[in-house]
Length: 489
Ligand SMILES: NC(=O)C1=CN([C@@H]2O[C@H](COP(=O)(O)OP(=O)(O)OC[C@H]3O[C@@H](n4cnc5c(N)ncnc54)[C@H](OP(=O)(O)O)[C@@H]3O)[C@@H](O)[C@H]2O)C=CC1
Ligand SMILES: O=C1O[C@H](COP(=O)(O)O)[C@@H](O)[C@H](O)[C@H]1O
Image 1 (cartoon, rainbow, N blue to C red):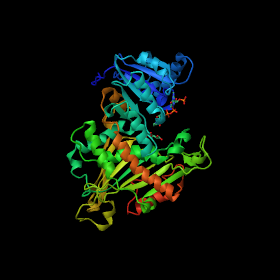
Image 2: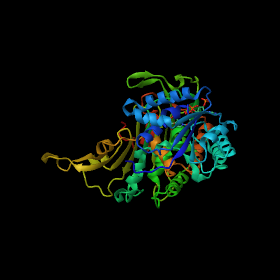
Image 3: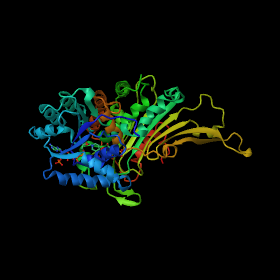
Image 4: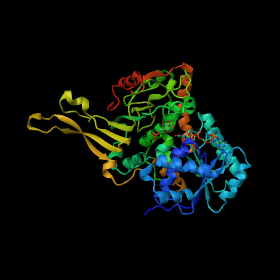
């Protein structure tokens, strides 16, 4: 039986016929229902501006749900119960009159959760209209990323929402924070004194964060070309991972204690100088190549693409954190589309022992590594040095893993999708997996200087073949510091 009690709510999904809603949000709500985590009285209002009768739209949601959840996890009785919670309302989000019927349907008996699966440009108007029809009181609003495309535009969006909703009822999504393995970073760091005592510049030489995607642009060229990989992935997911690795221990698990610590890290990131732009940062764009043995098009040949674009699909960079814990410890970040495999991984490289007593030729492999695999094959592995076995081996060293593979250890547990966790936490009113306004702004501030630098220097992205690990210069970026990307791979 579920151990979490969740209050009933009316869940209003703005943009209910869009890609995110159909692919991720309805499936996540269904899974919550399946797990017994939706209150019996919880209702879902699917809001979109497509005309036509409600039954046709509900039938589409039903069929997409079956497709994205998959037949193995569709239980007909649960699906029937889930669809009974659902109603479709035709609403143009910019038209106040359309909100009257929403207000009638929503009522005031239970809390409204308004999820904005729409472009950020309409968040402010939705908030204003909700307030005009008396639906802002007590409502929680959920904002999808990206919030703006730079500091200034993100402030505008945040300020527009803040006119009607206080920060403690605003839930900004970064879906990486909903991944079980990402939350595990907090458990790993703060429930094990073993690591925390070593977690600083005295013992750690450098940190790598790789988020590689095998997919290309997948029909999202229109959105992606205006964004690029820095805005799409680094500004949010990778910087959030960096924060969870680098932050000081929070006083407790409350949302603000964790967010206070994360924002300190973001503010401590060293700006990247014009010289650093060439030595510390690499941007790339994929050209045609191979993925799983099949030829795949380059970025400029994707569906709906232009023939020319300077948008990056790959970024590798070295970030430095200006504080006592991390002085002199580079954080190497790397993310790209159309890489050889889907892989999100953090590698903590520990320093060599302070006095070395083994054969000089074995020195290269010295240095423990903690490898945190976020996806796929979630798990943690600690590379430790041991002596090779056998009478003839002498004191020959070998690096081997102490391994915790989550799917073996917790075999019976289904790994929930990030959105399931996040939607549940919104219903519970727990903000600690959501991003506070000052975090978003500090992350934009740091990314803006990079974007401005690229613009000023006219730096074009370096080509890399689809199916490779990025431009050669991303290897030079780390080898210049006498290191290499772990296991590359
Ligand atoms: N798709 C994804 O994987 C991800 C999406 N996101 C974010 O989620 C949000 C939604 O993305 P996505 O689903 O891909 O986008 P889509 O364009 O597929 O969906 C957005 C929906 O909002 C509707 N909409 C926009 N303006 C109005 C309006 N004035 N009145 C009524 N409906 C309106 C659109 O309707 P219409 O079609 O009629 O214009 C569309 O159905 C965005 O903020 C995006 O950045 C974040 C991470 C991943
Ligand atoms: O937010 C986004 O994330 C996805 C990658 O998410 P993952 O959970 O599959 O690792 C990325 O493809 C997309 O471009 C970006 O907007």
